[in-house]
Image 1: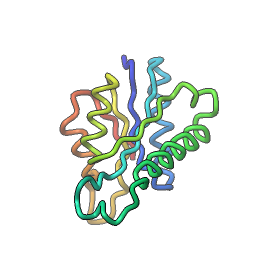
Image 2: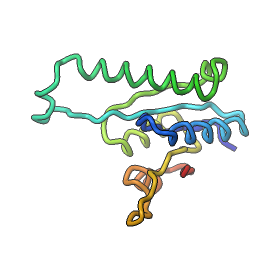
Image 3: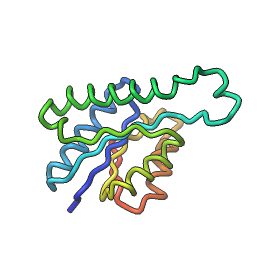
Length: 143
């Protein structure tokens, strides 16, 4: 029985996020668990790449990602269900941040999407594979 379900979304605009969110919400509903949704932004840190961005770029990116999470959750889950969802935006390597958020939230289950395989690629995406490999809780992969 899960007390907390973490749903990791890419927010890439395709139908996969809707499918992953729907499945995560269904699983949380089955156990009466808290549903958390997370999106991870890349971290440019102190690298030379960060010099190409304005100082407020990161804060704006976090706000935009949070707005997109809110909008997607409202569309898929409805206003009432969305009001109970915790929306989280992290910065860093996707798999590391997903695992950190799951640990902090006390998640019993992580729901994550797998990228669509092509003819030459029948493996999970690298982030999903790493989450599965390193997670201390169960991971449900949605295809």
